Image (cartoon, rainbow, N blue to C red; front, side):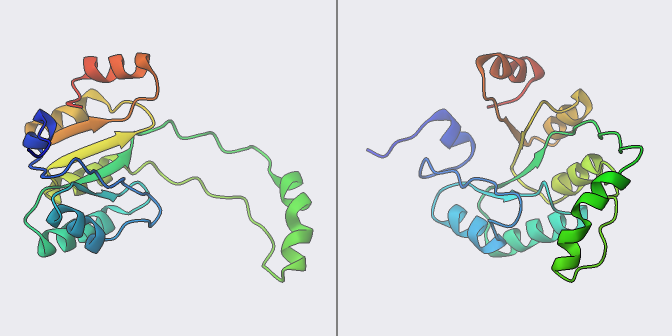
Amino acid sequence: MPLQTELMRRLKMIHPVIQAPLAGGGDTPDLVASVGEAGGLGFIGGAYLTPQQILEAARAVRARTARPFGISLFAPQPVPEAPKDSRRALECVAPFYAELELPPPQAPALAADSFAEQLAAALEGGASVFSFTFGILPASAIEAIKARGTFLIGTATTVDEAVALEKAGVDA
């Protein structure tokens, strides 16, 4: 008799296999769809994708399979304060840039937080499952996800984090 759990039934999985959402390019729509077609649950790792890329990836998965799939993002984090003066640090690394014949280093610009736009794209993309890591989502995000009937998975690395996720209303 094949293994069947409540989680597997809810996510329409045949096999207890969840393909990790690999932010940074480790997954493709073909991989996500193939995992679903094989009876597991495939994931788009969307943390480093723009909202448009998330939508494109979700549409590409949906074009390849009718099976459930998920999209994963990082929980929003406070934007760090930019250093007031980074000249000394740039001077320290400038010789390495010159040695490699690269343009002189510039102070990095901090990216604007795009979580809200990424989440909107993930929800529009039609994934059956949404997951997140590195914290807890704001209550408004959890409400928006649940309002769509999307199964919500959070990542816990301690018992305290697991308890906090459960209290926040995360499904798994």
